[in-house]
Length: 269
Length: 239
Image 1 (cartoon, rainbow over the protein chains, first blue to last red):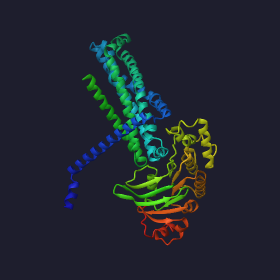
Image 2: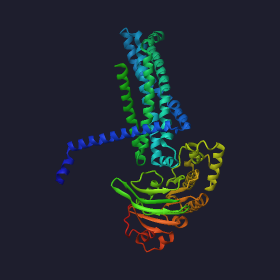
Image 3: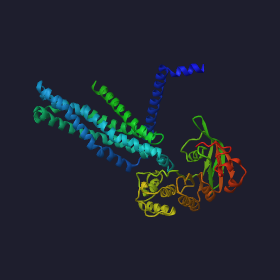
Image 4: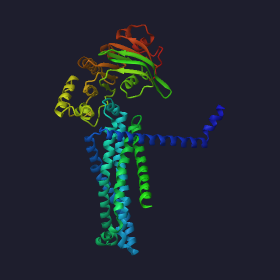
């Protein structure tokens, strides 16, 4: 019987299934950790345990520090896309709709999703590694022995800063995207600025702006919560910090794509 | 009041790290907990300070604060020495409205002087030596006037002179604050110079309880192996 078990464990099917089960367990554990952290963060905010000084610092980190890289990514992505579509649209006689297309692209999707990716790679990863380092060097235990709630001191300011600062970052980067779209289409296809901006308003509705801001709000909070949660549950030394950072980045990417899909289905399906 | 631990058990996974241990530390007394690595010494401190939850048993302590001095200091590396020491006064919900910044500055200065440091308020932990970091962590621990101070291997990684200094400060803090203290240590010098009582843990159980003199001179085969730092004896070396 023992030998049979050993042989069974060597089979590809057994290993495949046990790997699937392990992945399901890891997924459930991570989802549980993030949910519990979210609830404890909310409780800390309600109880007034949040550090206002930290909130201001984190708002600066989310908003001002991330802006150059976010604007660069959104700006360059717009140039790449518009340089390819503007010429074709003008050729096909759709030049008067380039502005509308760019505005839809920027306000509904590109501005917010590219800003989300930039924030994950720049802020999310640093939040996860910072908190993971605090975990493995016992600084989080020190917080608890000093009777300071880690969810009020670490989580709440970061999650709220994400929710507060992500919408303005997205608005500014979307605006830049539209301007870059106008400049690019003028340069590659000779489309006049007037023609571009005349059609711009055909693509934007109040609902689009609302969805854009709501998505940014959820993206900011989600990225911060996932990153803090991964850092908080880090184990071991340097390897644990690395794994927490990677986990935070991967989960944040997947989470914002899922949230984006939910918004797309909910508002534009 | 001091500290009273009754039938304390802690299990990690399938391993019983602490197995039904009981001990008492009187008010103002210093208890040293000794034993080889992995014997459950630090777990006792983490249980008393509520950093981990117990599986069975009871821990009764004074109603005031319990301070914890970590093995590697655990200072907040992004904050200055001043902000580290003032941390609880700035951030703790029940304390932050009680002090003006001027009062906090005075308290920080007093606590730093109590551990023999001066004029380092604006430095960051990375700019300090190991011994200084440890003393700053002492100052941070006592800022809330705790009733109990827990030291997790306070002299680990320090040279003999810095260790002696730390031992002196453990005594000084006890005398100044009248706090009940528990010191987890491997070092005989720390036990002899600071402790009123000693307990020795092995495999999650108390295998010796007595004074530092008794630890050195009792015929107990566990303490004999520990004092002689011998690999021969009833205790299997775990690390």
